[in-house]
Amino acid sequence: MLVLLIYNTGSDTVDSLKRVARAKAGDKQALLDLVLAREREFYGLSYVYMRNEQDAADALQDMIVILYSRIHTLKKNESFYSWANQILVRCCLTKLRRNKRWQSIPEGYEEAAEHSSETGLDLLNAVHRLPGPQRDVILLFYYSDKTFEEISRIQSCPVGTVKSRLHQGLKKLKGWLGDGYREKT
Image 1: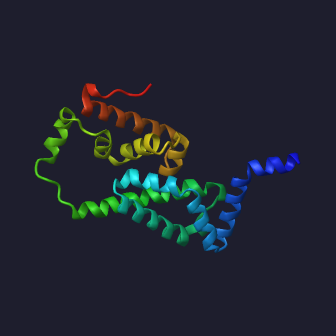
Image 2: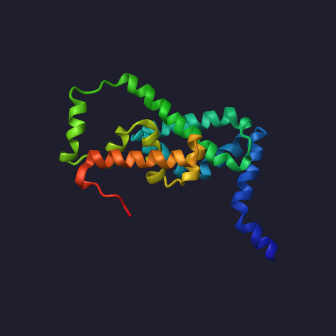
Image 3: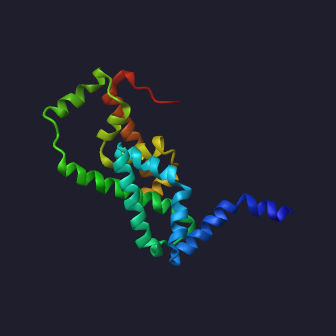
């Protein structure tokens, strides 16, 4: 009975590892089940980047297509969700770069952005103005509740670099938002 209880408490992990193994063997339903098990988390991460329901769903769909075509390259089955998050972030960034080519920046945007803290700039808009690496770390840490270690794996960089990017990004936000910005302690 005790063995059964221990097995059941870890069954989600055991089931996930079995599904990853089946997906690597070509079972498309197993891969879909893995994605559906964390669908809300994936969609939330995608939405934080894309800021639009349709684009978030499109990026998620792009991630699934890539997962189907590259699941065989996954080295460690237990790293599936970190690997999938990394692919999703890259899909979002690629989509944002492509969308940027087609959007024109309104006249006077830069000047308005610099003075926007006086008019109550939304924090998320300020975060999206940050340089890519700093923006990504802040989005993953604060909006997706990822740990430094998870972000390190997603961005393929040392934990120290993640912490540095977070610090620099927060410093810029504080400068942009002025006295109205207070870090949570």
